[in-house]
Image 1 (tube, rainbow, N blue to C red):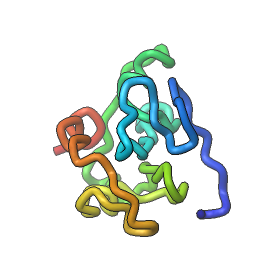
Image 2 (tube, rainbow, N blue to C red):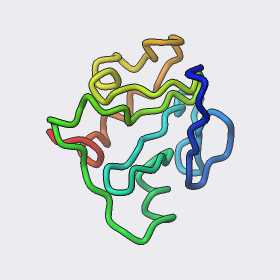
Image 3 (cartoon, helix red, strand yellow):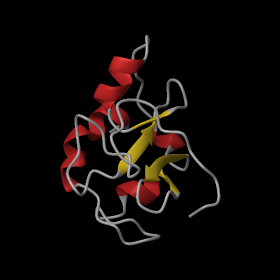
Image 4 (tube, helix red, strand yellow):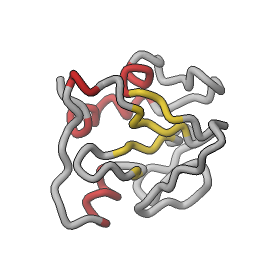
Length: 109
């Protein structure tokens, strides 16, 4: 653990950052949204709990810590996450590879 408690907003259902929308054993990441710099488990949680549209992280910002592993609570850079092969590089917890289908909602292509 990185020693810091990061607050995750939205419809979280457990301490691993799973939410009411995505709650499989591998749904254990939260994403810091570029628009508000707040962590949410998913885009649906962000949309339901904010009054503004989300914005994607730009490629030149991919060294920003914006991904939270819900297992070990380590903040990863976007590059670390995108290059992780859906495994936390710190604790080896498995992330949901299906999240890749939503990358366009969070990250510039």
